Length: 600
Image (cartoon, rainbow, N blue to C red; front, side, top):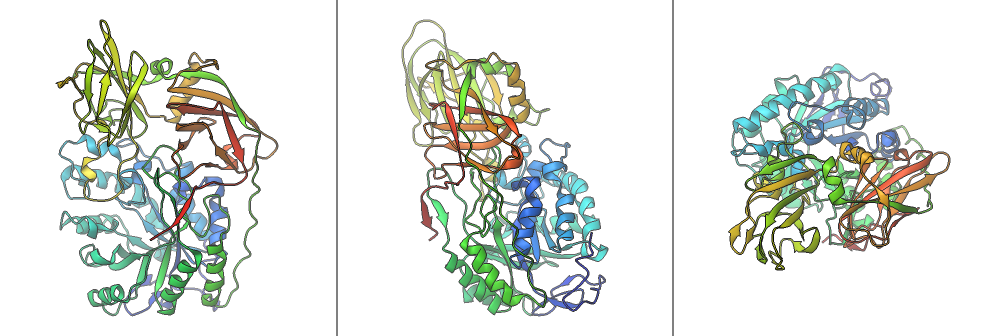
């Protein structure tokens, strides 16, 4: 497996006694001068069937080091329940990098940001009412120790000095911008070392927080998009006679709902990388390939990132310019050939032929839960008492009059409101009051609350509870006696809907509702792009897998659907739509990331 890794350009075997070292102005690896030419590709954002393809394309561009974060929230979805298989088989991913001749820098967190919900921290941590994330608070420290007890022993044998590809490990991530606990970084560093991490340690921060984000015994590195002489001088002053590593050179940026698609012009990117290399510095491209955030996790949905390799693994102008630039820094051996691109196909539309109203799906949820007061998603007694991470929660109570319904700051993040299952309006950030029509006797008031994603950075991580986080007032009196349904949109829930009373699609179906259709793929399925014109907002599933959310406000107008997610023949498409639908789903052979704007 490691036969590619032992041979430097000169053909001698590399010594494994000394790993990556930062004791002079240049890195050395195995005692030989070494420059990190890195690229970030996250295994959890790329279908496993495409890992090899994406890493070979990166290798063919002249990259010598793979960097990846490790998302705690995905590896430990419930406290004490760990997942390191299939799509989350980190060890297989690191071994694949080694087989392809790539070194690895591992970024195990525990906080990773990475535009993931809660920065990759599990939402069940928030069940602790006194929780202080990213500190040595006992509840947080114990959870980190339990996670590292499982994770770190898996990667220890893959370190450079043990014959593996891991040449460095990052301690936490941009802690300088958080910095709430002076002893925290030392705790994380010791948590890594005491479990057997012995390669070079590094920290990574923006230029203005690089000092406060460091820890003794780890080299500091920078995150940036524009190179500024002053920032380099400041880092040299803090850490003289050390190599400079730009750990995150941002090749683009992420997109959020209702905004434009962010792009960084290719010539801007390549001129900055050229300047970094001209100064003898090391660099990691974040991202080299963004991939996709499948499922409901996070405020950020499309992960193309305007990276050199597109979301669907296609070469971009950035890729070609970069390959040309890096070819000048490649010692001796030429680059491997660029792998051929995958075929993409526009399939016939999937016509929806069955409908299931939200109300008829409730008996298939976990629950119902009875509670005097509203409970936040995290505090629901579901998922083995780990609470609910993502998706929607339905809160129902009985009212006996109409009047003014006020949400205050209690709705996180959007709520569709119904009386006797008829839609009356929407609560969101700006609209905090609704008129409830008068009516006779007892009526059911329902609030369908969506978690639009917890923030992934900033100082408010502890305040990211979702669902109803406080009282809803009717005529200034708090509502009580709720029945609560958890709709987390996990595959197990979608699978359970096979037993539900689906009906042939009526002339005027009710919303919110689930719509089922079929798409047909001949032979070996190809990549395609799903479009939902005429639909408003919801979640789409293919063969029971949560492909992600769609929203007509964009910017993104298509969802990447990788061929490996499809069966040869019939494929089941289920759309959960909140408000209005077109009853067909289209499949095209090109992506549509929406209207673009240059990053300022």
